[in-house]
Image (spheres, rainbow, N blue to C red):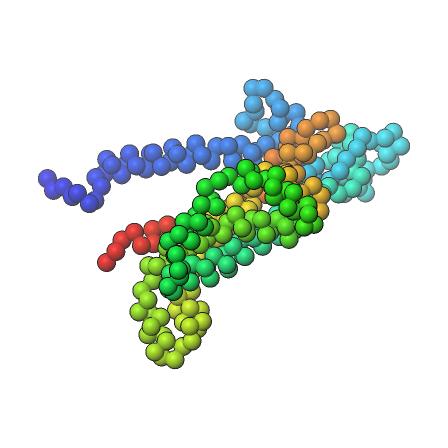
Length: 312
């Protein structure tokens, strides 16, 4: 009977498959529960024991985008035939819509701040990583360690000094202030990850481009950057996930104009108390952009994680 030390046996494949599927189900269960709660009614969302089978409704999604109040006797007596479907849904619950909620505004704040800070972190991180990789920088190792050390302390530990500094500079509750802060936090991660990818690209490629008449910038843009795209894309995913989900600093430094969705979603209050379907619906919608971004770059993420693992 032949045996390979490199190829797993059929039994090992089955065990690995079962473990991976089990792990995936366990990790996806909370996410699936949040999505399901977004389609429950207010009564079903707080039922005990929890309901797995229920009649789906979009009540939570209507509630997350609207502000409601109790239905008055005058409005209750009016005919409902010409009302939009979402208004009829709300009135069936004894409420009426008085305006739009602020969820859309908070959601777009997250888009601006999350993608804006990711862009600047990747742009500055790529430039710094290339300089560290290709040029003789004095005290290179010490500078790299100093950059990494900014990642060792949790950002919330310096939240009060940041709050006082932002207040004096007029950056509290501004998009520019949050983009600047998240860029500074993500920059150390971007420099270290992208520096590792650029180090793996042979410098002979650039030397050949310089001999052919390319400038240093042209060699970087046309030779190095395409080969480092995998690492840059995977780094962008990690930077976006942090900026997108960050909660503590957003609570402290924003309250209205630049408030993002994470601190806003838990404050969604219904007419009769905490509206859990609306909270779940808001969380589900909030997951979509970063999920789509990750799916679009998933090939780069997998290649980026294993880049340089096998040397020829």
